[in-house]
Image (cartoon, rainbow, N blue to C red; front, side, top):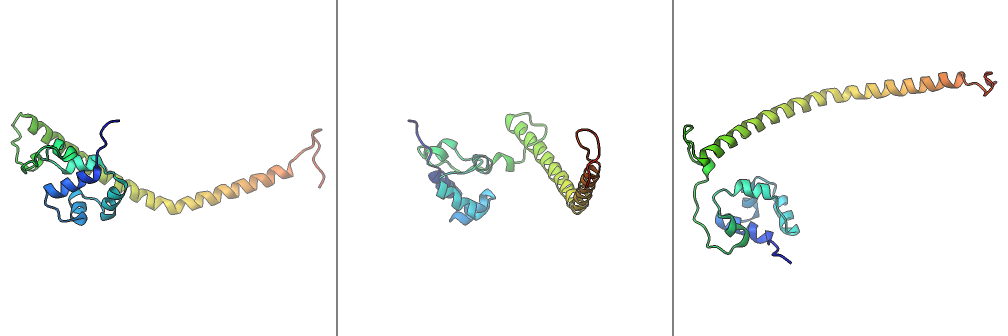
Length: 157
């Protein structure tokens, strides 16, 4: 059986590295609700994407295992000023990050516009349901009045 990652210890190392004084500070740092941190500790889980995104500059070997010495804090690459004409790997990642960030902002705006349109349409939906029910009831009455026997003669009421 392989090693099991102690996710509570990972969360504790994040607090240690960033000098966070408790779960409330950890939740603000990671951008999640305080009860999310409580649930992560209780369930021994976390969202790796959030951890990876927010914990820039941490030696991941130390963060996950605790075996390496605590790394020295470095300013995250995303917060450094990177010249646009720079052709290094960090500049490429930074440009990709900025492009995706802008794309996400546009998608969020579009999502808000669509949600607003849906909100405006929702009250009208009940009208369609009523019309459909009326049509269904009306067609059933019409169908019932024109029922015929197997011989083709109308039923007597």
